[in-house]
Length: 238
Image (cartoon, rainbow, N blue to C red; front, top):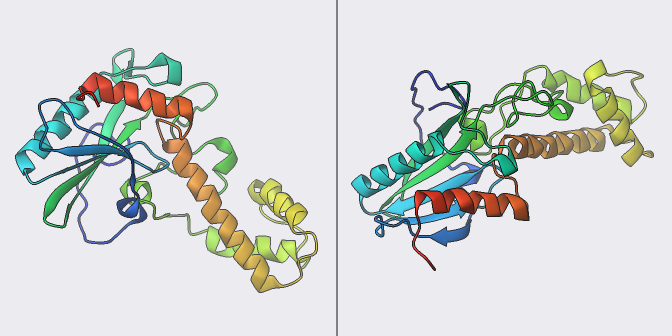
């Protein structure tokens, strides 16, 4: 599945090491009935279960069980909703690879519900980061590589000029961001340094974009809620 598209399947292939592949597990466990599959939660801004096994069949069967559970799973305590008036919200973005001779599958939980506060999507880039990235988060971005709008190529230069006093204005949607950076770096005069600062800030905002798209947040409450879903699927006791 691509992103939050629930109506059709599409597949992307290729061999590239994305940042998510390098991310470690922050918690490990075994699912009941699938003891040959090592499982865990990936330390990543989005909500990712990683499955590893010698058995491709066991891996696929467990992944399907997780998908079926996720499609019908709701948790009102953390704004997770499986459907609204018959419209489904849940799917999974799967990433498959082979590592050290074993099959490995990353399952990214997705939820495309909307709300009055977040009409573009509760788990979509929120309003305050949309000046950098408004579009939905696809497979490549899920794995940590930002795909940003072409307009930013010139706009970041304009913002860097603004920081060193060579420009009086920036695009309206960047004004608040540019003013925040100018406040942080009031004595900036080197344009190359300014451009570096702006690009670093774009990277930090993209990280926030991934956090917005994460169903379970990187908080104590979020970790506990993620484990409630894992327990719903069925894990062996420690």
